[in-house]
Image (cartoon, rainbow, N blue to C red):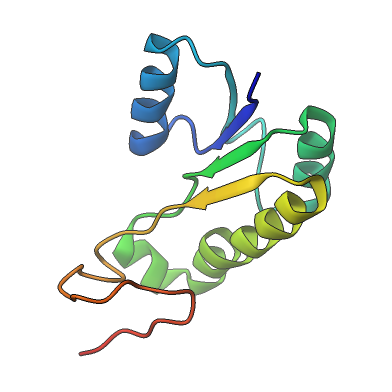
Length: 122
């Protein structure tokens, strides 16, 4: 049976996806603040190594654009460095990682797919 781990399970996207998984009777474990701070690499590593999910759905993020501009350090830790940490952990435990972004980063008005090193075009 597939094991799924959801970060940001209490957020809008995490809540919806968790509901879909529940309705389909797909098991998962979800975490969010305060029980798991994804910027705490050691605790996140320990948690994921213990659960050993097959798939990590990474929905945790600071999504307040103005707040990110004001507190760039937190935005960097949560929205960037935690992604690197989760990718590293996923690689170590053999899990697939799904990460989502927002139209505040890329507006979707392109004919070509976005890749890891895509840049904003203004």
